[in-house]
Amino acid sequence: GVLPLRRRGRRERMSQVPEIAMQGLAVVGALVVLRAAYSVLNFIYASFLRPGKNLKKLGSWAVVTGSTDGIGKELAKQLAKKGFNIVLVGRTPAKLTAAK
Image (cartoon, rainbow, N blue to C red; front, top):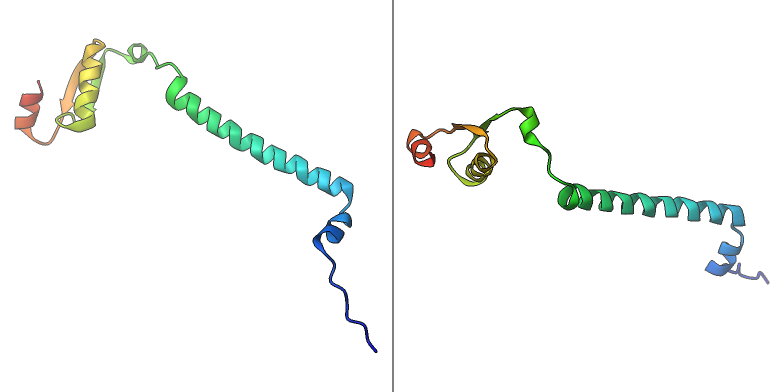
């Protein structure tokens, strides 16, 4: 009779992979992990730890659009606290007058 072909197990297949290939894959994997860790750490530094830029070296005037509500309004307040001359730009004249 004919004997059925025996399926090789995972362990047997892994033993057939040359050691240098396994080491190469380990190095590639380590590089991928290091790059991901660098990206995360760089994001944390840039977003939370890096000191702010000195905007005064760019001039003493700032133009703020959308300065009657939300982020634009708060940005205008923060720049005014730092001593900037502010030009407010908005669509609604009544809101611009109130923002002074």
